[in-house]
Image (cartoon, rainbow over all chains, first blue to last red; front, side):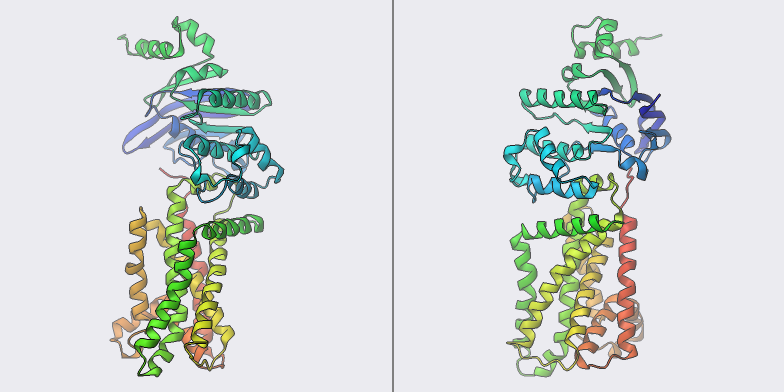
Length: 239
Length: 245
């Protein structure tokens, strides 16, 4: 079996506190996975470990067959940070053109990536003049440039209007259908119904890992928010 | 290392600089204003200005590139773009050399303007080699940029980055013999001056300006600067961490 993500016993200690505590996570290629949990649950830290920019305390992280962060893996992983990491003094197109030459992809991918995030109308605008949601889409477009087999997206839909959010989730689903593995974090449970699989994180631990329908059925909740609540309550029951 | 990535980075940095006309104007005009100011401060005794003009031609690009690079690098760190770059197949030296190339090109323009002013309206006569002066001035700029890259790792905020200039550059400039000849300093200070790279950078440009002869002293200055620059880049590369806590 080809795994896009293979995490074994991952622990990250920061400031003397385990932020990620013994996480195991195996994701087959071509899956759209939602990484959910409240703020501070360890989502970003887990994602940073997958990208290989996080110093880890224990465990192993393999992505698309390479150790996370190794030169081989860096070609294969697209990463969008929570705060958009793009150059504010360059235009949308200039930002993408720069990352395209860094990634070694052809210039035609620039226009395609701009289209994928629906920013055609702003391609010539300076990123510093765009609205917050537009800037995060520029950031997303840079990660799409190289069409990587694994996409790690840290809260890519925050601050977007519902229509755009829907568009992006359709894009994620399409990318997964085409064979990419897409890991999307969010603290909005309801968005996650579009995922094939949900991983619920709380206090650095995986508290649930299953398909949305299965989770709803198991917890007999009417929505995913309720399901999460149910999962957490069950964990806290004595005995 | 890849030529394509280095060139793309240099081009990107230059483009960003062009988008900031105020910084660009300050970088180009401030050395000219200071030069003219000093020329007329020493109006009565031309020999003083004639002596310090070459040193200043080397000092300005060093100081300016140090400040610009340390702030630019800090911005790259704090905006998250550095982390994003380091998550791609880019080599650390691609980023550092890209910055160095962009700032060397900028320094070349700045040195050209200062030279035009000094040799033209300010009427300083250069007995030495103009080419060597330009070579040293650009090397000084590269050295300044290299040290700026290293030391930007010490700064967490832009305020701190700007403070690095008086902390690290002023002492070097004072000890390089700008105000007091090094031979007139007490031995410990002479020793300290001999350990600092800027001393050789300023020394070299002074020698290049005073005579066309390419002696062993000049060669030593050139070699020290040529060795310190890659050293600074290498230390700079060590401060770029792909994995952070």
